[in-house]
Length: 92
Image 1 (cartoon, rainbow, N blue to C red):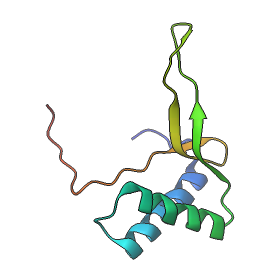
Image 2: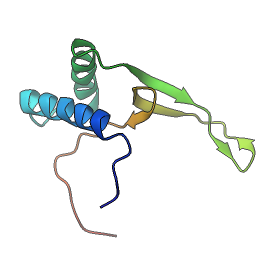
Image 3: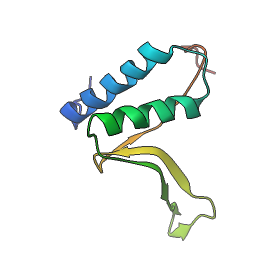
Image 4: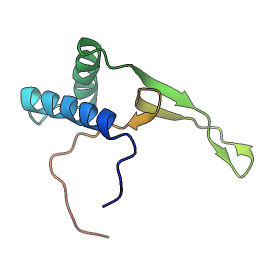
């Protein structure tokens, strides 16, 4: 397993993700989980930006579409929120 770069911060974030999942369970759209995570980050003094916009540079050309990170936490960790009914190990 690779070394976790921001171990303490990652554990804080994962803890809040589990907090949200343990309270809401499954079945909601991603936006609901994002709202709950935002609440947890605010409540616990975790610095974050939501829906942060990035331009994408591809081989020296700025692409017309931008990348929007769900959350940028502690100014260094991007968190993308996904809501799925199950996780599948199969490779297509």
